[in-house]
Length: 141
Image 1: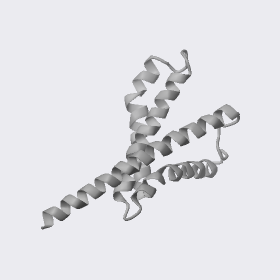
Image 2: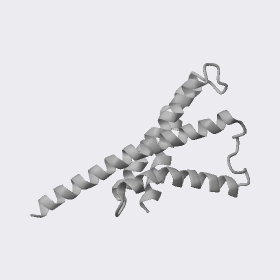
Image 3: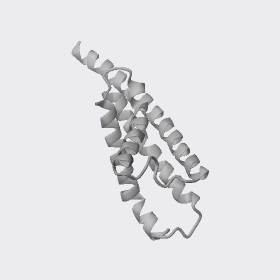
Image 4: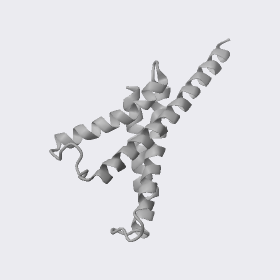
């Protein structure tokens, strides 16, 4: 349940960042066609993935009943598996659009950045959970 909450939060934040905050940037500056260097939108998308999985990992870690950090990090593989399953269910194949080694390397970079961000978020969620338990114990006395 905690991992599911983390995945949902990561997806919502990712959509809000890409479709909300960066949408004017993508449409105004880059237009529908990519006119400038391809690295800038990729950096922004990597940032959006890291930002969303940081908070998803934090939420999953905080809500987990035990092994907080593990639950926070499991947000990324759960989201990846959900994406693969949805692609297969829709008949698009395992990883649609990944035909070259460069694209596969980009997928690996996104996964690595997402796992690192989820780990940092899980560590923060674990620390928040411990702090809140300590404060709650003090208030009960």
